[in-house]
Image (cartoon, rainbow, N blue to C red; front, side):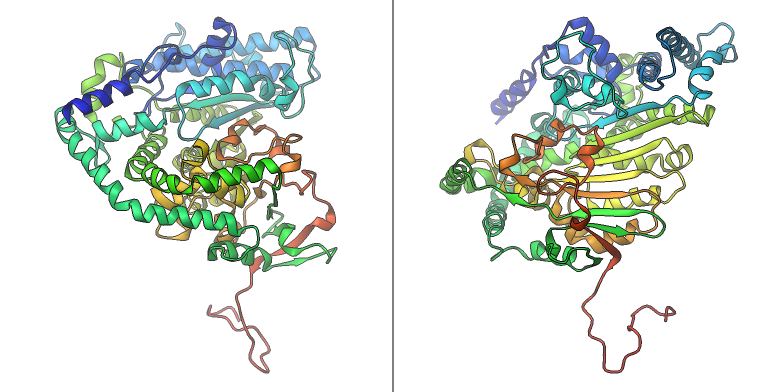
Length: 618
């Protein structure tokens, strides 16, 4: 057992590979400095260049000092301000834009020096007159987008995303516009949707997270190395034995998933939650301009208190090509082996890796060192001037900037994919009063959210009820695409990552604890969702993407969980609900609805008013 454990650790140690930039190395370093915030597994900011190293580097030795963090933030803010100079106002000449950029660089350099106590004249000596002239007096929009990726990602995946997407995001264009553009070509137009992107990068790969579970963590805390290594064989044996014990249950869950996939064609044999989600959606009380439109396939607008609206749809699925049928045949043929391999795949080992992924998503705003001074004592000499800076200080800098200049036109969009939505929920909750007071938040976009319905409803609607509200978008796969997703030639378990979370890893004891990124989970929880969002001052979109095979090559359609990271998620057109032709729904396809779902109720003879189980309302 000892020899096997040493071999396992050795495999993990060499499994990382250095990232090779697609563009010029110096340009890549400059972009990563301005566009990527890397976070260690402990929840602290680390150096940019770690992806250029081989193997699993010791990220604890790469934590940024306070001074390094201040200048890192300064570079990011400078980039955002310079982009605002270029795109934020059409009234500036080229000379004025250059002067605007110069004032931004000078201002942010002095602010950073002030933060680490370096200016000779003190912080009062900062000259902000030019900054105020260009950004405060002119109300130049400063637009940032912060993207949180999901699980099963390494640091290098953020680098790949950055290199392929920053040009499109900063111009507010779809990626297809950049496919054939040569380096240095600035002829493409700039749209009103331009933003300065910042990618939050954190380690969430399966091997690395399971290694931490096996070798470092016990009961949610780090333990001494001697104890962790001594107990690791015991933990591994427990995981393997428990996986065997869970095998029958996992086979059953795979069967129910496959059953719903096949039953979705005709509706016979579907799980009750599928039927309930359709019933909840169809029972919304709506005014219909065209009664020939099928009620269950409409786009519905639910009017809440005030002027806010929830838009929700029931997506369509249409795949009948020979290629799809052949793929389904392979899927069916692989069923016996898939049930064996897939059940082991989704056993205790994967579940424990998932738990560590969630831990790391929470560490970003509640780092482990805050509750464990052993980390500080053991690694203090590596941290240079302290334990490190958490990601929260970046957002605290945004709030401080807005507080110093209340009329500054600072706009922030938060976009999260899968586990990234768990991180955003923690961010929103930790700084709840700052969001409501600052008003910097404009849009929150969740894509295939791994966050539960319960934890999302516990924070997002409350923030949206303030005067400084924002719009909220929840994007999901088509319900059939969700359960039909398969990979590994059909030998891996079927269903998306969210299916695995709900069925195997989280084992939710209540339907509101299921993931919020599933179309079925959203529509079957409509009563709780409508009640929570009633009274918000921003709009809500609950969009499920249609999966129409004939249009797949013409439109960027997510048909698998991982596809969301490749969408044009920075564009409002991606967030908006479309009809089966991927066009804006017509008036006849949009129903106006009341914000309630009728309970089954049969009035008694001669009843003059509807009875209620709530006292003091009649």
